[in-house]
Length: 321
Image (cartoon, rainbow, N blue to C red):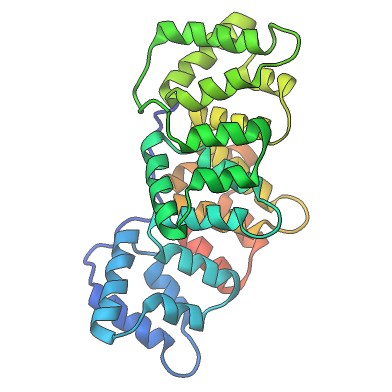
């Protein structure tokens, strides 16, 4: 199964870890006149998330201070966004990003698609639970107020977590599902979007890989070609994201990173979110995929699009290997 790539992070737990020593070093970096940003990068970008949580606890316990508050008062701009993002537990970070995508005027649909369409069921349940704890409203209900139509129905299905668990496969049923997709799209006049939503939001990623193979056998076209011919807008983008994550998640994120840096201006929010949230999952795979797809390294692309402490923090997370 192509879906079973071996996830390789770029950030690992630091050996010989001493949270008290790190807490003291961070305090020293922020105390008095001026801030030693490089010391902050050297510590926080080279620790795993559970180690950062332990540093934060030691900071409070031994120095009587709140590490996140101190960092916020000393840092600014995009550099602050990276460092504070690293300090949050991963699921809280994603919940914050979802909230930010829907808060205020307008909605960042691309952020919703990127976060929601790449999760398995267990991860989705966890995100939904934490979101409600953090914001005192159900994630599904918030998404419903910010989206509409087939796109809203698809995201609601994903959030309410009806996807089969990883490893759930039924090759015979995949043949029937491929036929259902064909009959709902290419095989009829008009498109029955609900069939696409149901199959792509309910089946496990493993099952979907079988479905897509069967679809190609049946119709002679890839599922991507079929989606492009039949659908459009955010609904199309969301289904395409699921297809890409089924086939190769690092490919999906590498493409997102490229789009965030391509053309005029940089989508820093996306750049930070992917690098921070994938650094302990599969950022090494994403880097390898990026280089293969675009014939340049992710590091060189980030260096040309960013500057200062912000650039140094992202590069520390990307790592040189």
